[in-house]
Amino acid sequence: MHIARQKDNVAVVGLDGALSSGDRESLDSLEQLCMNLINGGARCILLSMKGLRTAPSVFLATLASLQSRVRALGGEIAVVHPSNHVRKLFRVTAMDKVVALFSDEQSAGDVVKRRLEEMERTLQDDLASPRRLTRIEAASKLARIGDERGFSLLSELLSDDDAVMRLQTTLSLAGIGGPRVVEPLIRALSDGDYRVRMYAAEALGKSADPRAVEPLKAAVRFECNRNVIFKANQALEKLLVEAQPFATA
Picture 1 (cartoon, helix red, strand yellow):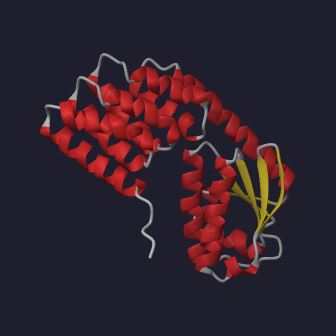
Picture 2 (picture 1 turned 60 degrees about the vertical axis):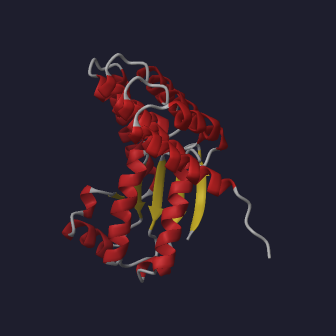
Picture 3 (picture 1 turned 180 degrees about the horizontal axis):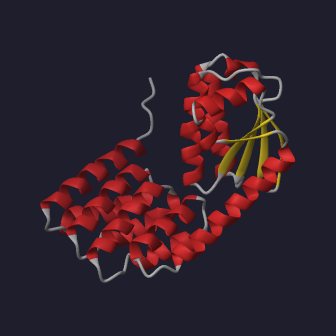
C-alpha cells in the first residue's frame, strides 16, 4: 500500500494484495494512512484497486467505517480501477451506495470534487441558518477539518443566552478535541449553568493539555456544585498523572 501521488486536495492510494486477504494489520494501516491524509488537508482519497481481483468482507466493513469517519471531516473516499468481481461484490452488498466506484482517476476526481463542492454549499447555508442547533452542527464539521469559521462560531455560541445551546456547543467542542478547543473549554468552566461547567471540566481532563491545570484547580477551589467539583477533580488528577515523567530504574 502506498500513496501513488497527491495533488492539491486529491490523494491516490494504491492498495496491495494483503488487503485482498483481509490482513488486519494492512487494514489498520490503510485506516491510519487515510486519516493522516484527511488531517493533512486532503479532501478526496481515491483507492486504486488495479490488479486486485477481490475484496473480502472485512475490507468492505473497514471501508464503510472509514468512509463515515472521512465524511465527518468533510472528505470523501472513492474506489478506482475495480475488477468486475469487485464491482459485483459492491453491488450485491450495497457498498456501491456507500463508496462510489470509477473506472479511472479523472472521472472519479471530477465527480467527488463536485460532491464536495455541494457539501460546502450546504455547510454555508447551515452556518447562516436561523436554527442554532443546525449552526452548531455545521460549525462542528468545519472545526473538525481545522476551518477557522467553525471555531469562531462555536466560540460565539458559548456566549449564547440559551443554556441548552451553550451546553450543546460545549459537547461539540469536547467531541472535536485537540489544542484549539482548550481555551474555549476553559472559558466554559465559568459558565452560569453547572452542566456546561461539568462537561467542560470532563473534556479538559481528556485534553492532556497543561493549560487546563490551573483553571481546573480554581474550579475545584471555588466551585459550589458537587458534580462539577467531582468532574474537575477527576480531570485534574488525570492531567497531573499524565504530566508525571516515566519512572526510571
